[in-house]
Amino acid sequence: MASEAIGDDRPALFLRKATGLVRGWSVRDSMIYACLATNFVTLGIYEFTFAGPAFPRGQLITSVLISGIWVSFLVIAYTGLIVTIPRAGGDYVWQSRILGSGLGFVMAATGWWFILWLWAPIYGNILSVQLFEPLWATLKLTWPAGGAAWFGTNTGIFVVTLITIVLAGILVSVGMSGYARIQKWCFIGGMIGFLVVVGLLLFNSHASFVSSFNTEARQLFGVHNAYHATNAAAAKAGYGTTPFGFGPLGPTMLLVPAMMFFILWPNWGATLYGEIRGASDFRRVFTGMFSGLWITVACTVVFLLLVAKTIGWDFYQNLNALDYNLTPQFGIWPYPFMFAGWLVHNTAFQVALILVLSLWFFGWVGTLFLSSTRVIFAAAFDRVLPDRAAEVSEKRKVPVYSLILMLLPAAGLAAIYAYSTTFRTYTLDATLVIAVTYLFSAIAVVVLPFRKRELWRASPASKVKVFGVQIVPVAGVITIGLLGFNLYEWLTNDNYFVNNKTSLIYMGAMYVLAIVIYVVARVVRRRQGIDLSLVNKEIPVE
Image (cartoon, rainbow, N blue to C red; front, side, top):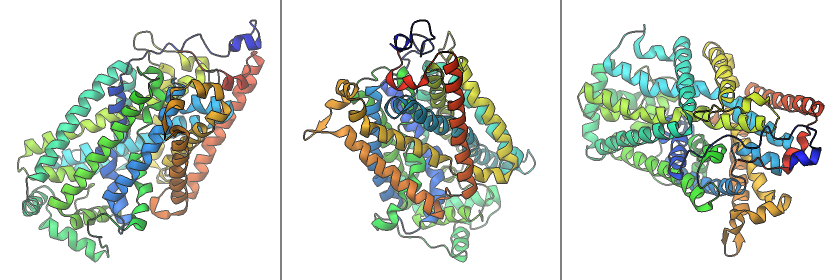
């Protein structure tokens, strides 16, 4: 043990003999979490607003399928890491044990701690455009001043972001078992809402949609002949669409990095596997993440096919293009599920549909902080961060102080984000930083058989072979290709909006902050008789 390596008269490397966490989730819970993390409803349709107009020659449905297949290899690679070291902390634990303590902390602290503070306004914006704005518009509410459009003002952004932070904090604080129950019912209810939308689009004609769209747009927004007006406005702006289909491949591949903004996250729960039953079973771990990913892909494909059938592909892309070019027809984000609800001319039904579909958000919002708290917890358990961050509550086994380290900075940055358009540009590369963290975990799984031979030989992942070849390291190489391709495109193509110079500088400062924290921790712990360089030689106990 580490205590023996440094002498019994010195503090132990780990904070205590066991983490204090409990395995409160099943594989089914991890599957739902993976599906909510790759959330088609909250993230997918939101990204389509930008993806289609930015790459009009690409085919969304083909890019979604290519993305799903490519990300499946990421699932295999992460499954290999999970079953080899099934501990809370995920990327931090694996990278610190395989690549080195300092590198692991810097990558994970930046990608899972600091960056997720900046995701709170992103989540908040989703809550605004998919719940508050369509609800206010449907009910024709005029308070606060401006009605539905108020939620897009500086104060509206701040208020909704604070609501989001509070909701995320509550969901994490109820513990893993409590969160599992909440996300299960949100997932079931949200899926029922999606199936209602599927039924509406499947059993109604294009002519019915056009008629309903024109009627409701006139009544709610005062826009006459809205369907034709939307197409005419897009044509006037010079935007043209590509007919719905499955090619060409070249322009479609450029859509893949855009799809990663929602499809790249089936492993979002990887940091939680110290609290998931069956975490050492390759098949069960793989099934959870893989199922969540492909449920998302299936829902996306079904939605796009029905859009082409009933809503009209050109119209849908024109609607997105107008919002993308800041010339919206209704003054709020064009929420396609609200438009589907217009097929039923009943306000109560329309409100109910919006509320039921919002369950996708309420089941998803906890992902803002839940996975991150386990990274902070694991670093504190390793004595890199203050000991208090690894304390867990007696009743629900929640790392309370780790949660506070997410909540308070997120709230402070939310205020700056809401009232400073300059600061908003600093957040553009937030997704890029998480992908870099994933990249180093992919590297870790490739070098694992060489750096930790005995650990690898004992791992269930080493037994998974195809034609005699160990598939996990191969999946790691393919994942490196996926992430390398996306990072290159994001950094060189302005259409993704994630290669902003000031944002890159801000993200670089976050890495510097992580380095400073680690160096200070090394100095402080050395004075206490703890050598943090030994972290990569030890696996934390459960």
